[in-house]
Length: 79
Image 1 (tube, rainbow, N blue to C red):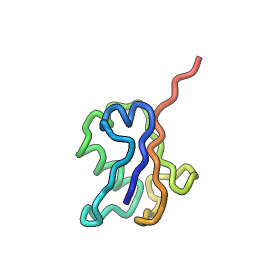
Image 2: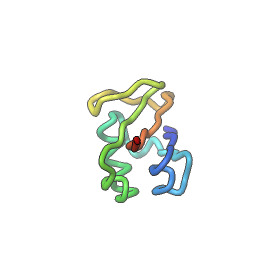
Image 3: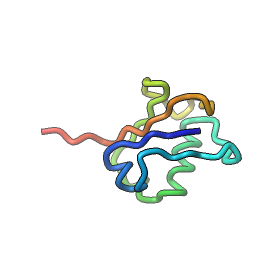
């Protein structure tokens, strides 16, 4: 499973893409968020972080498969 990172999520992880091994057993958005929070605890401090699956915002209960394009959408500040 490949996860694309942008903005602050990229800065926190130091990577623009994370490859998650199948052995991690991630099959939902919530499981992905939990796994990422364990690997990169600073991600848990973000005020919000959305997940997009195949270019659509996803909910925690949505299923994931290794073939999907997954992206973390960090909080956006406006002005």
